[in-house]
Image (cartoon, rainbow, N blue to C red; front, side):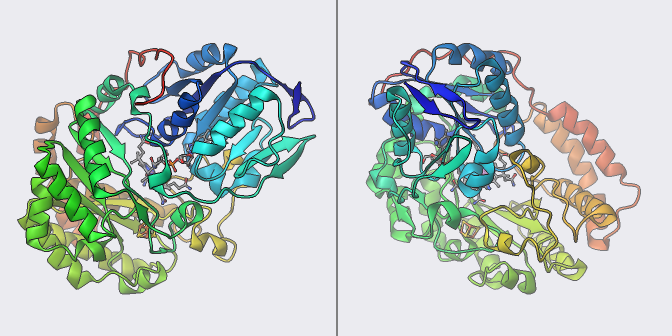
Amino acid sequence: MCLASGSGRFLQVRASNKVVFFIPSFSSIEATAPLGLLAISTPLLRAGYDVRIIDSTISPDYKARILEEVKDALCLGISLVTGPMISETVEIARCLKKWNPDFPVILGGWHPSLLPTQTLEADYVDILVRGQGEESMLEVAERLREGAPLDDVPGVGFKRDGKLHFAPERPLKALELMPPKAYHLADFDAYERVCGRRWAMYISSLACPFNCAYCTNAGVYGRKWNALAAEQVVEETVDLTRRYRLELLWMSDDNFLVDLDRALKIGEGLIRAGAGFKWSIQATTNLTARLTVEELRLLRRSGLHQICQGIETASPTVMKLMNKGFQDIGDIYQSIARCLEADVIPSFNIIFGFPGEGVKERRETISFMMDVCRRFPGAEFWTNIFTPYPGSPIFYRAKELGIEVPTSLEGWVDYFPRYTVLPWLKGREHERVQIMRDYLRIAFDRKPIAEMKNGRLARNLQRLTALPARWRLDHDFYALPWELWINRKLKHIRSVQKPKVDAKLLEPATSPS
Ligand code: B12
Ligand code: SF4
């Protein structure tokens, strides 16, 4: 039997029960297992499929590995978000189509979910999954194996006779109804070799009740926050960290603190269980500000060591434009003091260049950052340049803002907050913001997840440049940036090496217990 494919050609039905997944590298050394792929693997494993995950972050020869694995496989699924991951996606999909134009290539994850039509238009993509992929991926695999049509598989897009077809969206399912993630598929040894630290991500809740103008979350997960019960979180995280000897769990929830009682119960449960691992969370500034010192101390005793908060700007004007009316600078100051008193690192993200941010507003944010770092050593900031992601509320104003929206999947490769160039932030002004971000990086200490080689020596040398960097930021003066030159040299000494040894070839996986 045959299935219709994009170019009018036919995808041959393959009797295989092997599914290969690929996750392109995301230009980060903070390497760990890709949760999205671990999530969609479980239903396949339970149905008797043999699942292989190839992650280019830990597999330098990923192309050869994929070409070898697909020989007797049913299909290849790729997981991606908007940005640099698209380049390896396109490379692999094209390569597979060259090898066998009928071999099904399936795309899933944030970018395909937010821009389904344009993504499926790419001639090397056969099938696309929007939103949660646990059930969709299993149904796609079953249909491919049977040679049955995909028309009624919710959340799926496909091609027939060169035309795109989309089944209705798949309704969102609460996290508690989802199967456990197949962590046993992850090669934590290989991730540790890249990152220098043994850690994993864990999701304890889905969605966020807020709607910041730059955020894509509502586009995929809606705004109805839902969460796992505290008892389940405690049981799973303790088991996970012991089973794989993990020192750190990063709760990747968008807003961990929506239910304060649940958060405290998790803390109490972890203390009772003698958990012994470090964990960090992401939460909004207003919800973090609700925590008392006692509550923070309890969470600290349970292992919580960092709360990452998206403050994004300190300018009241820009805060309003970002639809972040829920945050208050005065509350944030008090909350920072409480966090540090309880020995929890308050870590903040900043976005520069949001539409409406002029030089004055940017200076307001920098002055705030300098003030916080001076008064509260231990608080840290991570900065980015505004990136207009498809699916975010502000994206609907792209045309009015003069943003050139890419017209093909490949066009999104350069969408990356580290270097986004915008119509109102380009040329010398863009360069200036980048230099300023570099100075902010060296002016105060901050701790990435990845363990740095020669860390202490390089950090001490970096500290020598911190004082002049602070002077420059105070005076907004960046000519002859000699401190940056020194730090670039240090970065080479400190950087974590890419692996020379490949991840272990995983044996056919069985269903997680
Ligand atoms: C953890 C995380 C990271 C980690 C990734 C670590 C790792 N090893 O994977 C780190 C810190 C490195 C990271 C970095 C970045 N991230 Co990030 N990150 C997240 C976060 C918080 C959780 C992702 C996750 O694992 N979720 C849990 C899994 C189970 O859910 P999922 O990924 O959505 O997967 C489901 C579906 O998407 C689907 N699915 C996924 N893959 C596939 C594949 C197939 C074949 C199928 C069928 C289905 C499918 O099924 C899954 C199960 O339902 C999300 C926010 C969020 N709420 O998800 C942002 C998010 C994905 N990140 C985002 C961004 C912007 C970035 C950065 C650009 C940030 C930066 N300032 O540099 C970088 C770049 C990363 C890159 N890849 O290029 C955006 C992406 C927006 C977009 N349009 O693509 C998000 C959505 C945050 C946001 N709200 O804006 N990130
Ligand atoms: S608070 Fe965070 S997750 Fe929630 S809408 Fe704003 S940016 Fe998105």
